[in-house]
Image (cartoon, helix red, strand yellow):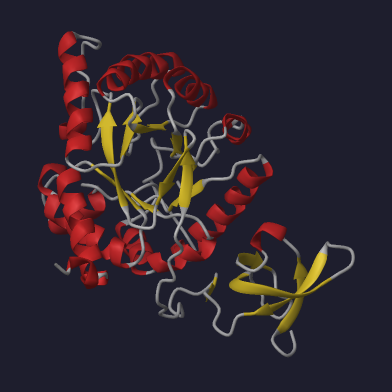
Amino acid sequence: MRNNFAVLPFTPNFANGFALYNVTASPTPVACKVRVVRPSHSGIRTAVRLSATLIFPLFSKTDIPRKEATVMEYTINVGGRLLSLARPVVMGILNITPDSFFSGSRMLSETPFSESDAECIRLRARQILDEGGTLIDVGACSTRPGSDEVSADEEMHRLAFGLEVIRREAPDAILSVDTFRADVARMCVRDFGVQIINDIAGGEMDRAMFHTIGRLGVPYILMHMQGKPRDMQAAPHYDNVTADVMAYLARRAQMLRDNGVNDIIADPGFGFGKTLEHNYEMLQHLECFHELGMPLLVGVSRKSMIYRMLGGTPAEALNGTTAIHVISLLKGAHILRVHDVREAVEAVRIVDACQHPESLRV
């Protein structure tokens, strides 16, 4: 590499943006910002100028430079409507499960599909919207650490029951469904007008998922998880957690684009196959994820990274959750996925007032 130039494999969707390249002078891949300066006639290789400051070498844990977040303003197409993410929005969690890790989020009894269950789902959907939530994320398969999968039929059965209740209560609400199954995603979009699919597995647990999302034409939340829920916390390992997760999201996002998916939201996957140290290391460098060129979702609500460090239980983790929400907002998060909607909305408003005090002028 001479004069800060290198001839590298050309990736069109990452030109003039974030890319991962094997630089001849480096023994390992380097994550860098690139600007195309001399494309080749073949279109296969191109000369790029590496930015003066690399984001970080993938092999280093200690040399990640401090940098200010450069936050893009995004819009996503939700059922034919444009949703602006210029100001952060809150996604409220609604679990149609009897066994999610936080008992306060469970909206299904052990004997499912009772009138009481329907009323709980209706009230929770109304609460999310009344407290200022923009999105409702509906899940019917618990993915807490150590959990076993429910069958696809059971997941569909729960979702059909819950989504019908929600659509009656809030027909125009923007709904996301938390599923790793392509058939479940297809049913929810086709039969209930769900506008977003939220996949904890990044397409790894169902090979048909990316193609299905491309055909459905809905936004997709791309999350990183090492392993599967039942074993993901056994012994997670990374050379550099921030770099490794970014590289994974970049690769999977390219696969999604190749399948015709336009609106991709990145989720680093806090608590999914990460140790306590990994989670806080990612949080420390959260602003680096903006180099991927996608809206950023943060889901830390009442997770073990909070209550294990502070002591206590998920029920006692609200204050810690709010602290991390504020840190995430200051680092440019676009979407907060939360159990406690009112508190998260208030955090968004306070951070926004801090960043735009002129908006408070009378």
